[in-house]
Length: 476
Image 1 (cartoon, rainbow, N blue to C red):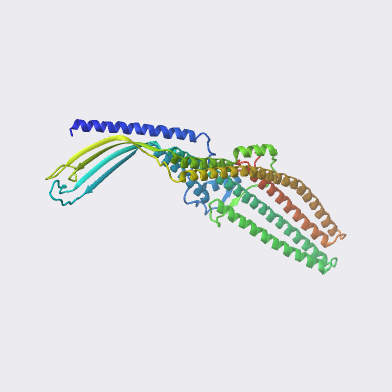
Image 2 (cartoon, rainbow, N blue to C red):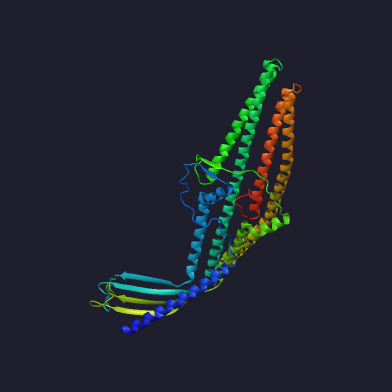
């Protein structure tokens, strides 16, 4: 073969490669544009989460506000790193399926040694064997929409996993806020129990003083001592509950359970003025799980389209060059040696015309799965409506409880002061003072619980609407 012929064939090969690459790029870009019409909800944290969540400063005391605690959990909690890795994996899978639109370049090299006995001897195989080297480039032309379906399915899965990451972040933010508020509630309960213990100890001292001068019986002193012991026990339980909640918060933030941390904030009433209709409208537009459910329906549809591709023929174009020789370098040597070069360009088509209903029933199976996913999507929409309404009712309930609890604390404080004054004036009993002190402590705990429940319900209603609010203690 002359050098000019070889050069001309090489040029043809390069032109074909360029055309195939252009066709593949155009097809993949078109699929990418079609798949990106609906933008998935973006993750709340845009960086890459570190594999080691330990903070280099965990040995020193730290103080976190609610927003600081939420953002640290979004960055360092290992469970979110798992969701992020899944999202990135799906994105790489989308890129992998996109590559199927482009051409494929393959090479092969074979060495064959033959021994043949024949009489009379006509042709003898080359003594050193036969060596073949081939190069082929192929471009899918029509695969029955399988490539398109596979790419769209991978793109939808990438969007779904990206949305799932945001949902996990919203759930993590709500969990951190819930434990943060629980910690503040328990801290307030500790303060309330300490105040109660201080009141009971003062009452014990007063009762002992009256008993020493013969104004009160020994029974009153014993009752006061019993109440002090009970208050000390309740204080220990309250402190233990607070420390347990603190350890859980540290865990959510990616800190050791024994880390010296502090969480600062105050249980305050933040008005929530949205109506049920507004909340439902926001939820149907923003809920990530609804977006994921819609993508699941689309993915099931693409699975059915991939199954239906077996109804059609599979067509691809190809161009190959093959060199044959009787030496490793494909040159001719010795008696019976040979050397040759062949090239061809063409198309291949294969079509499974009949498979005993395999494709038909697989198509029906995939169709029923599409129907199943649509039913699940509709069921989820109904569940979202219930979820939003129940969370809004919890907000309104806690809101009413706050007003009632504030009034109860005011009345209990006045009753305790009156009972203590009556006792000091020798017109009331020790039991009245102890009972009033207990009711005051209960009223304070009810107010603290109502405020914490209100803010917790607020965190839950925001998540039910698909909204992110890092700090519930600030007016939105």
